[in-house]
Length: 190
Image 1 (cartoon, one colour):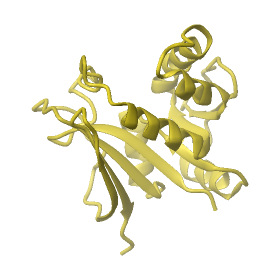
Image 2 (image 1 turned 90 degrees about the vertical axis):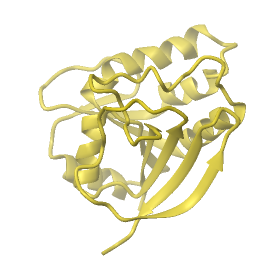
Image 3 (image 1 turned 30 degrees about the vertical axis):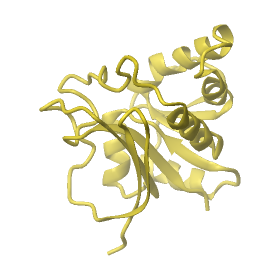
Image 4 (image 1 turned 120 degrees about the horizontal axis):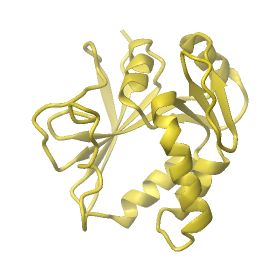
C-alpha cells in the first residue's frame, strides 16, 4: 500500500501560515540551502501523485509550470519538472475546473478517494498543503508520514494544521545551514 506523506513548512512557534494565510516567512532572503532543496526534490521523486485542495492548486500549478518551462537555470527547475509531470488530484467541493497538465478534479468523499489512491500501484503520494486541506487529512487520520520543516522564525499568531492531540514518533531529523530543521514523524497507533 502506498503511503500518504505530508510535507509542510512550520514556524518555531508551530504555525504553518500567518493569520491570513501568509507564508512570506518561508523563503527568507539569502537563506537557501542546496541540501534542503535536494531533500525536497528527492521527496517529490519518491512520489508520483500529489494531492491538493483547490485553493492551493489554482496558482500553484501555474507557478511550477512557469519555472519548468521558462527558468532552466533556476535551482528549483528539477523540482518544478516533477511537479508538472506528477499526477495531481485536486479536491474541491464545487465543480470547479483546474487547468494544468496531469490535473484531475475530485469532489467525492475525501477519505474514500484517498484510500482508493493508496491501494493503487505506484510510488507514494504527497501533500504540500494548504492549511485547511492538510487539516482535513490529519483529522481523518490519513497521513502516514509527516515531514515538518521548522523555519527559524516566529510569527506570534497564525494557523495550525492540528485540531486535536496527535502522538507522533520522531523517525528522522536533519538540520540545514539556513537554520531550518526537517523532522520526520509517524503517527503512533493507539
